[in-house]
Every structure is written in structure tokens, then in C-alpha cells.
Amino acid sequence: MQIYSYQDTPFPYGMADMKRRLCYFKGLQAAGDRVNAVVCNRVFERVTDNGMPAKGMYGSTPYCYICGKYKHPRWNKLMRGLDWYVLDPIRTFIFSLRHLHKGDIAYVYLYPLFMQAMILLAAKMKGAKTIKETCEHPGALRSHKLSWLADWIEFHLLMPGYDAFIVISRSLELFVERYKRRDAQVICIPILVDPAPYDRDYSGMQSAMDVPYIIHTGTMHEQKDSISKILHAFQRLRQEQPQLPCKLVFTGAQSNPKRCKYNKLIEQLGLTDDVILMGYVSDDEILRLQHFAAFSIIYKSDNLQTRNCFPTKLGEMLISQVPVITTTVGEASHYLQSGVNAYLFDENDESRLVSHMSFILSHPQEAALVAQRGREVALNTFNPISQGKRLSEFIHNINSTTR
Image (cartoon, rainbow, N blue to C red; front, side, top):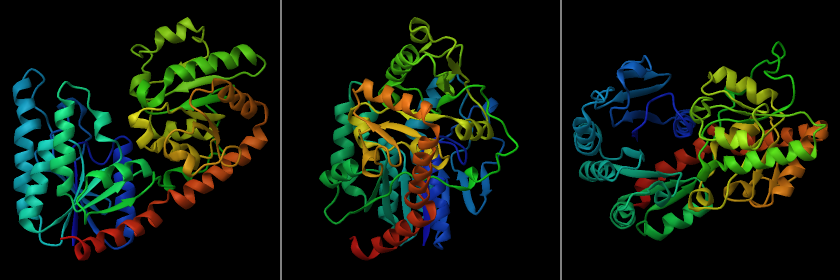
């Protein structure tokens, strides 16, 4: 049995979705399974190449950009669109007919509808089984005028075609159960974090800041990350507890100091000297920033996306042994207890959030114990090897229980 992992983002470096796939690969390979990474679209500009060939090996994982790596020039929007929406799905269909065999697994971690349809059709023709990764509610990812039609197509035409689903949360499990085929199977795999990059010696390093700081890495999308609420709470902390020096540090694409969409709000709140926008930094620098941070705030307001997702950065902060403050929205509250292994608050309770912030800064030893227990949750529950064993058993069971 071969497992083919289909994606439409770069391999092997990327955001949370790529990190999750790599954790799967590590766990499945430890269980003795063979995994192949398949990139279904042209995803690079020629000036942003990752320096890797279009086909090769990454560790123990064979990979292939089956449509090539490079997009057409920016001025050729027609060909770019034709590739993405039509030609690449057809090329993926042809690739699948050539490589999939009876008993193989087509694991689909992408969202475009025509691409999904082509993979499902090819797998059906070749007798392979199909698994759909569901880390987000599909309806939360669309905002165009025909979103209702796209939702109907996916929910009623595509989802019943899959033999199994991997979901990241209990809410998504309920969603999938509503639309899946009756005999299709479902497994809930929580966020995953590989401990290896975090097991390093920091004794010869120093903190990047001369005062305690709050760290936020990754995206700065209001719907997912509630950045404006974090900024308002931070301003209130600075006003109510001026004796507690603290900075708020952001890294990632949206934190470019020249283009950050929160620059105006930061200035209005009088936080220009206390908020540090670092933009892109290296992976090593992110690990250092996380290690020495006073704490992190993962603020999930209640909406369709956050109710169903489970943020990877939570696992990264926990395994970094950073005290975490997060809301009770979504999946985190099933794994964390406030004051035990994290600090939880209701999404609109700014006073509780500020209280947690103040407590951590004024009681660092108590907060360190909470962070240590948080790391144990990540090591024991969000572990790629143990979860990979569960996933491997699930995959091997699919052939015997689905039509």
C-alpha cells in the first residue's frame, strides 16, 4: 500500500498545514507506511524558489511537483488561471491514473473543488481509497458571491465520495458526520507538534528583549487571531499595571512594520514604543523568541472558523514551555484547564484576560509550572508518533470496512 498525499502548497516548507502533514509523515513512516508527497499546482514565482528540485526525496519522503514548480509570469493572468482551475486538475487526474493502484490511499489536503473531483474520479477508477483532511470548516474559507453554490457542491456531491475523513476537532466531526457517506469512517487527530526542533540547548543564548514580552507568531487575521482585541487588552494592561514592563512582539508576513494593517490602531492606542513588528524571521529566531517569551495569547473569537479549528501555534507554544492564554472557543478547552496547564478566559471577558496577563508577569515561577504542565500535554497528546500509530491503524482498516 502506498499513501499519496495531495496538496496545493509548497513542500516541504510552509505554514501550519505543511507542518501537520510532516507530522503525519513522520508518524506513518514510524508505523511502517510508505508516504509520497504530491504537489498538484505550480506554486512558485521564479524569484521565490525554495532551491529544491521538482522531484526528489525529503528525508524518507519521495515528493513530486507533478505540474512543475513555476507559475507563468504575473502578466499572463489567463494562463495562471487556466493552470490553477483547469489544467492542473487534469494533470493531477492523469498522474493519479498512472500511479494509484488498488488498495492505495489518496489523502487529500486541499480545497479547490475541481481538483478534488479529479482525484476522487481517478481513485474510483483505480480502486484506491480516499481520505479527506478537514482542519477547517469549508464554508468559513469562502467569501465570494457564489459561496452557497460551492458549499452545496462540496457538501452534497464531493464529501459523499470520500471513504474516510480526518478531522481536527469534535465540531468538525459533527459536520462531517452530517454529509459523509454512511459507511465512510472518521478519525479525530488533534493538533500535532514535532518535539525535535524544540529540544535544543538555550544555555548559551540570551533573550531577544531586555524586558518580558508577549509573543505572537504566524498570521494576523482578525477573524482567526483577534489582533485588535489583543492590542486593546495590552493597552489596558499598560495603563493598569505600569510597573510591569512588557512588550508585545509579532512575527510573520502580516507583521511587516511598513505594511502591517494594524499600524494605525497601534498608534491610536499609544503603543508605538511597546509593540514590535518583526516581519519574517528565521525558524531558529522564532524558536529563540518563543523560548524566552513571558507568555503568548491565542485569542479565538467565536465564529464559524474558530469554533471548528484547532490552532497549530497552540501546540508550538505549549511544547516551547511558554505560558499560554487562550479563549474557551473551539477545541482547546477539551485539552486544557485554566490555572493547571494554561490560562483560559471567555472570549469577551477582557478583564479576565488582563488579569491573566498581570498574574503571569508578577508571578513568573507559578506561571512556569503551568507552562511545564502545558508542555507535558503537547508531548503526550499532540505527539506525531503516537497519533501516527492511531492514523496508520485507521488507514489500514479502511479497505476492510468501506465499499
